Length: 240
Ligand SMILES: [Ca+2]
Ligand SMILES: [Ca+2]
Image (cartoon, rainbow, N blue to C red; front, side, top):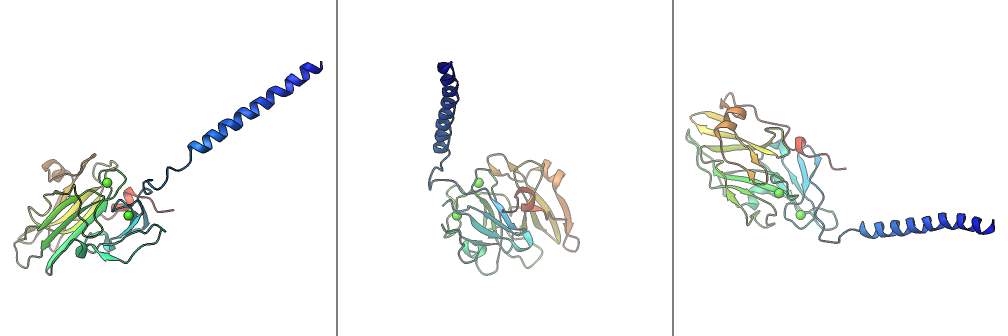
C-alpha cells in the first residue's frame, strides 16, 4: 500500500520536472537575435507621415509628405535611441537645382522590409511643351543618407513621355504591392493620370497600355484627372 502511494506521487512530480525543462528550453530559443534584427514593419505616425527603415541601419526613419502628392517630401533619419534627426527636404538630398521640380514617393514596393523610393527631377517647363526628366529612378532601399542614392537604382520611364507634376501612392489590382500614380503634363494643356503598377519582387514597372486603359485617365489643366488620396493608408497601419 505504501509503495503504491509513493509511485502515484512520483509520477506527477516527474511530469512537472519535464514541463519545466521544456519551458526553459523555449525561453532560450525565443530570445532576440541581437543588433542584426530588422527594423519593425513600416507604419503611419499620421496620415502624411510614414515611419520605416529607409537607409538600412535597422532604425526607423520618418518620411513626411504633406498633401501626399510627393512634391514636398522630407526625411528625418532615425537614431538608435528612437529619436529622429532634423527634417531634410528630399529635393535637396537628391541634388535638385534651382528651377527644377522634385517628386518622390516612398513605400516598400518590393516587400523586402526596407523602404524604397521613386524619384523624378525635371526642369519645370514654362511653355506648352513638357520637359524630360533629368533624374527618373526607382531606388530600392537601403538608400544612402547623404544623397538617397541606391546601388540598385534603375531608370523608370516616368517623365519620358511628359513632365511629372505629382507622384502618389496608389492601389491598383488590390494586391499587397503599392503602385504609383503620376500626374503627367503631356503638353498643350493636357494633364494625365499615368500609372505604374508594381511587379511582385521587382518594384514599379514601366508604362503599359493595359494598365493605362484600366487605371489611367486623361484630363486638362482646368479639369485635371482625379488622383488617388488614400495612398499609404491603404497599405500601412497606424503605428501603435
Ligand atoms: Ca534608418
Ligand atoms: Ca523594399
